[in-house]
Amino acid sequence: MQTIAYHASHEQFSPTDLLGWAILAEQCGFTAIHCSDHFHSWSITQQHSGYAFTWLGAAMQSTRLPFGFVCAPGQRYHPAIIAQAIATLGYMFPDRLWVSLGSGENINEHITGDNWPDKKFRNERLRECATIIRALLGGKEVSYEGHVRVDRAKLNTRPNKPIPIFGAAVSVETAGWVGKWADGLITISRPYNELKEVVTAFRKNGGEGKPMFLKVQLSYATSEELALVNAYEQWRNNLLDPILLSDIATIEEFDALGSSVSFEDIPKKIRVSSNWQDQLQWLEQDLSLGFEHLILHNVNIYQEEFIRDFGKFVVPRLKKR
Image 1 (cartoon, rainbow, N blue to C red):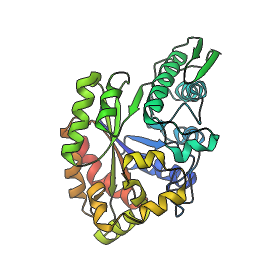
Image 2: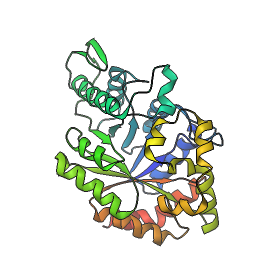
Image 3: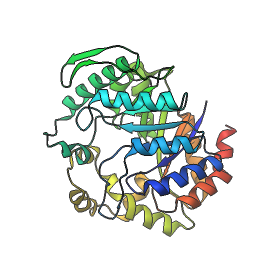
């Protein structure tokens, strides 16, 4: 079944506004809601970073759509706590939840005071956490010694059906690795040929036949100027090299490095257009690569206009595909 999800960006907007937009997205025809769990925002100009797990309970109670979220177990969260949160949401809202696990970003994880490990260690830890979370969701008592430790943990409240556990990947290498253990893939939009390489790596390494989610980073507004300028103001820090994105520790560092991004760089990574037909054409290309599940993140501040226009013009046409 095809998914056309609205991305509720906690790093940019208040949880109250996001709840209202999630309700509006359902009314306008979006088929799911998605969010990411962050402790910090990406820029000093962004004054929010609400707690995703709290928000999910409120938003899922207020709508009838499926929800997905990305989180990073291992440092800021013990995997048993993530498993308990997933299990509770899955129990209360049956058949409406999927979860994506990532290796994390220093900007969020350094708050524990622990050292920020290298990518190899983080991936090993993530794989361990995914195994632990699956076992707990499956009703097993878990004890484990590795990069994380678990002592005789068992969940009493669990969903009646398994919750899909997907893997988050940006690079081709990580996409191939995720294919070996995850129930599916979530990645972010980029030029067509680069995205095709990610899909190929995932499918060739165990991902064939598994669902693929694409988080589409776009900027849609009433004019080209508004779409471009606001994408620059809101999301330029996220256009830095993925290795930098993972390792930078503070918002101030992000803003300093983000100043090197130019207006000309924005359309290379973000789909900037005030024309819904342009946006639809790009999304149709994503579908042609095998992404049946699209998560639409309008990176600028014009959320209501985006939801209403896409609900009227774009979502119905995608549903007919």
